[in-house]
Image (cartoon, rainbow, N blue to C red):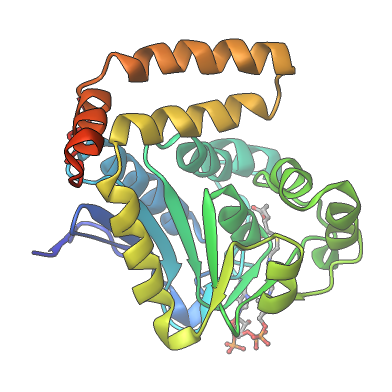
Length: 265
Ligand code: T3D
């Protein structure tokens, strides 16, 4: 059964088969971020974290775009008049919520991902792109610096040289080029993007939720750690995983030659 969250307008949140889908829902503005969408996306992510029945998340866009970044038509100023405030208060919490989410996040990039929309895709654990998707670090064109984690994620995903080219030159990257440089995991026909993302989400949702959460934590930790520290961190996390019922179940299922049923305990 599919459950929808009716309280949200600029994003849609649906839950089915053990995973959630959040759809950015401002297609008339290519899903550009206005303040409401930033706030509601964060609320959606928090709801996903709280819901124990949800074990994976698909993030996608309504209409022909994934997300065009900051809504350049939204009047600026008001309560938080500087871009620093806007980033600290609205964008950065979204990026951290995705990165820290204890469940794997798949970006199903259905069209253009520009500016902070590109950063949003970069913050996800896995990226599937439709054949006609594209990625553009559009910040420089409007006299801005790549933000919302782009300067952190990009070199770690594609390496320093390519990150510098994407950030400084700012040309759009096609889906096929994105796959070639490792910016996306896979390119799929546009009409099957959501089916592919959903079947990957179901596979992830069938895994051990505890092992998924700890694996995300280990990958995140290793990005800033020495080998010695990462080895020690892995050992500590494995101690937690090794005491879990999911580990017991996984080993029992292997020995019985059956599929494991993980509960997250
Ligand atoms: O400001 C802060 O708070 C700091 C944070 C900044 C983070 C950022 O994201 S900065 C970067 C902001 N984003 C951009 O600069 C991207 C601007 N958009 C584009 O470059 C292009 O529209 C796209 C490459 C995304 C798509 O091009 P295309 O040719 O497919 O579509 P289009 O014709 O340019 O756009 C279609 C419509 O969407 C058009 O409206 P109209 O004329 O049909 O009424 C266009 O104005 C609108 N649109 C596209 N992007 C935005 C947008 N409206 C508002 N904000 C947008 N970002």
